[in-house]
Length: 444
Ligand code: PLP
Image (cartoon, rainbow, N blue to C red):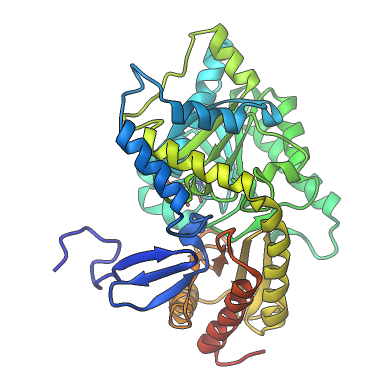
């Protein structure tokens, strides 16, 4: 009997034994293509020799030094690589051990910014329904994933409120133009600022491309420019959570590059270290950094393992490989192939309501009725059954619920490593189609 406090205490988990390139193998010997890199994490696949050597060399040189006393070369070089050229005005980086920790740091940094500039009355965050920003209490309170929030609602802080996400498949009216939809959402955000009192708001927080809760939902054109304008009008910050969609996953290093806006603060994680080490990060804009420099002189936040040398060395090598091997270009071109493959095989399926995505970040949303977009009853466990069928067909994909209102609705995410080739992507699309057929018993 296992003594580990697993997510599921009623069934023994599969023991993953080895990983090599796109493949994950169980202790019993069978293998699957890791078609989602876990939760869109393993961007370079498994067993990358360069990353392993960088980590080993770092561990041999220096495994740990507390940041109260020291920085380390790997952290400095990683920060230089990410913000040395100040992309979008982002000028400094802080490294944590997970996406949730990065979000907590972003919340505190944004609050500190307003303390430094003499606006202590600002204490509110506006986020969006059907969003996920992490499982620690601050990040969970910020997020709008009702299923994950609900059990803990009584112990979450009261400084968070939520507006509608930009989710065309479920939120855009029949015949409503993109411009009209954007204007409607921007008006809703403006109303929320007014309801709270505009000078009480610290930031509007959003995932640039929504990941877990609704599945690879990019905003319609113009949305982020419109919400940026609302934030600017009221002196609030824009915080973009790119924990899942960032670091190349959508075809540009930062997903916001495709939106014509840059955030004041950004979080990153999964693709930063590609799963070789636990690492997340906060990138802080010049305006925020300058306020801290001129004021108290530093970030009033920290963790024992922040900027961990081995984690930073792993992430530095992952990011160097992405640059040197031209993987962003590859994500863009292979992403089109994956999207086309999924659409061709499943776009007309009776139970597939939507096939959506960007780069190597794709989702399928399953519905009981395509015409009305009615979702399945959660008791059908559709996304779990698709995940299980996909595993039997030899691919690991990421299942999630909450597509409709944060509690119901099914989708799965397909997010292969950037090193996948065309044949692997075609195999993933084929196996995905087979898995859908296994669950619904129909191919169309
Ligand atoms: N933000 C987003 C958008 C995420 O998808 C996640 C994790 O799935 C998090 C934050 C939290 O990251 P972590 O699980 O590393 O704490």
